[in-house]
Each structure stands twice: as C-alpha cells, then as structure tokens.
Length: 321
Image (cartoon, rainbow, N blue to C red):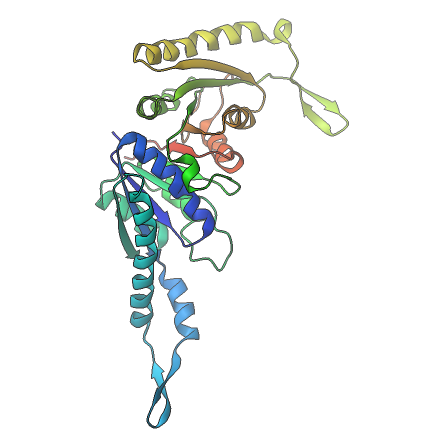
C-alpha cells in the first residue's frame, strides 16, 4: 500500500527532522522517498528586488549587471537541487531509495501536484517553519495540503527531539484512536500495515468523556471522577471494551502484537499521553468523523493532537469526491 513517500523540505533544521521519521517508515515499508523543494515566486520577487543591480569587474572597472527574475529562479532551483541531493545521499546510506524533485509555484499546490504526479502514498512534512524568513513550505501550507488531497499526510510538529539516526528503524508502537464512526476506522488498515512492516505494537484507543463539569478555583472545570451511578459510565466502558476488542482480535489474527486502551478525559490530551508513553511511537488517525453524544469528533481532535504531540501523526483524509 505504501510504496512512495514525498517529503517537502524548506531548508530549515526542523524540516529535516521529518526526514529521519520518513526514512524509518520507508525502511520498514520498503518504500522509496522523494525529496521535494518548492521555489515560491513570492519569495523570489523579494529576493530579486534586493539583487537586481549587481556588479562585476571588468577592464573598465565595476560594471552593473541586471539580473532577471528567471535568473534568480534558476539559481534557486540549482541550489535547491544541491541541498536535496545531500539529503538524498544520506538517506541512501540507510538502504532506502531516494530521489529529488524541485518545483516552482504556490507551495501547497506544488506539493499536491507533485504528490499526484509521482503517485505517492504518503506526504511527510513538518507543520511549522522556524521563522518568517525561512524558505517555507510549512505551517499553514500543511493545512492546505491536508484539505486538498486524499493522500495520507505524515505530520511532525515543532518540539520533536529526534534526530535523523534515532528513527531509522521505524516506529515501535502505532496508536490508532477510534471514536465508533466508520470514518475513524479508515485508519485501521494503514495502521496495521505499518505495524506489521515495522514489527510494532498496535494500540487501539478510545477516550471516554465524562459528562460532568463543576465550578472550581479556576472557574468551570472538567470532572474526571467516577460518576457511573449517575451517568451510566460503566455501561459505556463495557460498550467501548467490546468495540475495541474486535479490532484487537483481528490484529492478533493477522500476527500483530495488539492491545486496547480506554482512557478518560480530554480526547486530544489522552491520545497525546498514550503516544508519549513510548519514545518511538506514531499516531495514525482519520482527519475527521463524528458519532453520537458518547463519541468525539475526530477533526478537531486530530488538529489538537498534531499540534500537541511530540510524535508524528499520520492523518488519513477522507476520500475526495
């Protein structure tokens, strides 16, 4: 299922950290990596304005040289190819096939276009650039990519501490949050494929939100106590246990090390906490979904998990059309 992984890079140190995770994933899946750099014309316009009049030495002294935008773009493409090749060479030392591609245009549009052109199965990208001056394809671009394609997007938010070599073996645990909806369950198959390829444990998680709020020193507070007598929490836990057990048994039948985890509290925080229990884990979840009042909406939860977890999140978008 996963044979090609597209990795957009922007030249920042943080964006390179996704390369380590993508390489580990590609190694486990025996997939190829395609490194992509996007030359944004808006950045070129700024750069061209500052370098329009340069000077070169001649027998008559300094002579003005006018550089056209196309010259600046050509130079940027040439430099991007050199930078990407360095990263590609490093990836290939791990035994993973890698090639490079450079495009020009709106970053999100180019990323999606390149992804479909190369027929990739995953787009792996960091979600925030380090400064406003960085040659960026990140931040809000990730959001646009997520909403523009049905290709799974492997995201990594700032704060992740792993370096290139730390994740070369693939994930040790694969966390699959479920909410009872059919859409959330679309994450199960890709998560199982990754877990099987990496020899990782797969953990199916559902979060029970207790319908209790009270007034405390900080104002309205969420209550995390046991209110089974008043709200039927025990019956909900039993329902969730039976629901998750079906996925656990299917995974075990497929030869996977699998278990269920029922947590109570804020869905996004509980998912983040579950992922943080293992140093080398990833979260695989659908981008949105909905259930009854007993369930949670995956869309807003996925966004919070991406921005809070110091672990990669593989987002499975809904099929377009």
